[in-house]
Length: 386
Length: 138
Ligand SMILES: [Zn+2]
Image (cartoon, rainbow over the protein chains, first blue to last red):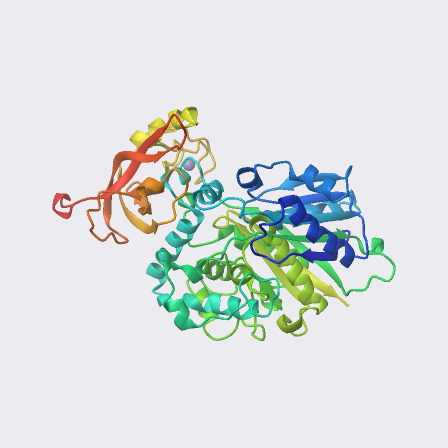
């Protein structure tokens, strides 16, 4: 199998980019990634995006962004898998390079939520669920997470405040990430007093949606420019798995079945066990998803994922650091770009360029993006090559 | 405007018509034509009783377009007596606290209003608590 390395990374701050359009936002991270990779020129562009059609009245981002980035003529298309779009685009980029068909692939995630507000954004987000049988009942992605969390609390008799451990870790890590939307640690007391969003989800159980763009350049090691300045990071495992779109179609909604399969397949390809990971960039769009993802990965027993957040295991110096730059909760959740941010952050960790957020001696990282309640799951294993 | 889509789904929306698998007898709602239990074709229509219990529920305050008028509203997963889960709003709760396990039955209500000049209203199933004294002993 051809080896695929991540040669370039770029990311913008996550937040409200009122002043620039979706194409300008994408270009910023592309330029950073190209500079980081010593000027590698891509032959293919895979754009990760969820909602540019309803929110920016702009489809066909492949051609738009390739052209705007001065890459007119390259292969390009949009990859959409709701919140997993970024991970899915990374998967497509990986396949393109691994197959030998593409020498250098650019994976760029971009999302612009702030062109619209309120009920329009909520309606657009709801299209990622089952339109005929979920969205028509007024079910939103946040309400889906709330349904899961209430059932989880009921079945496993979990103390409600235990979920506060997840946003605490995320915000502590976001505090030293200059690109994070929230750069301030929070306390359990603040969590306990937070306003309700959709009971039992409170404000700190829900990651904020925001604008952002991140980019990756993938290639084969032999195509790297001479004098390539970074430690090499390879994609050791890659997997994209689906489950039922609707939550109500699952025999056991509290099991993220696709996440379990996706972790198994990616780890098998990489030849490691989840317990060997040095860090896990998981998809903490909702604190309940963090618990369910840890359980699906086999890192906690069913109904016990919340316990990992109680004793520091998920901190930067713990046994399994997660959300090392703040995760979706503190860095922010830029929709289809999120999976690409996760990979950019993992590369910083594995190059040992993470500064105050560095996981000491990191060698293996897992990144995982979820579409909906794990209806699509993209999991990648990254390894530092010495 | 999506009149054909809502018209196509009228049996499900008004009658909770699903399917039963002729091979393994699994009851399916929403209908899906391929049985998830045994993988064989399942296109035999089946009328669900419309009775079940609350599996989980939450309240939506920030409603999507089309639902602003009814917000805040309660949306739930209902475990139907015949087995499947269904997503539906709860209605007619009269201020009573719904819990996991509360028995409910299907009713037909207005689901949403499409906010355009022709003002399409979509009707369909919701679920309401069954008054305790009306539950026949089993
Ligand atoms: Zn069957």
